[in-house]
Image (cartoon, rainbow, N blue to C red; front, side, top):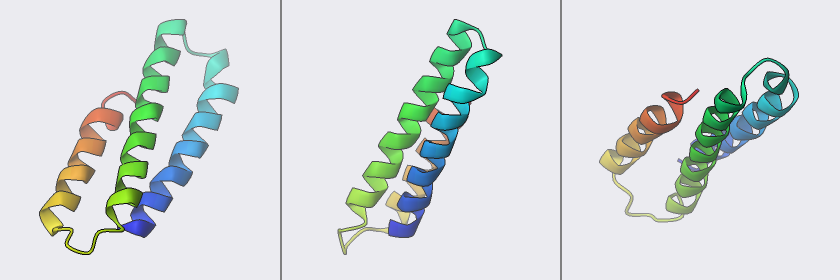
Amino acid sequence: MKSLGAWLAALAVLLGAFGAHILSKTLTEEGLEWWQTGHEFLWYHALAMLILSTREELSRASIIVMILGLFCFSGGLF
């Protein structure tokens, strides 16, 4: 789970840079707001996974729920 959180944080950095440098030239203001919201949700999920990975009693179900939430909240906005 820790490595997944780290990969998601790296992905958040890449997608943030992509949005700021490339998409800012092509998307409307509303499109950029959607992108920013998806980017923020991705960061929140990555940080939550990193924090939760410090707990030893973390269940497999909680990991699956976090990943589903990530796809629903961030994936739906990108």
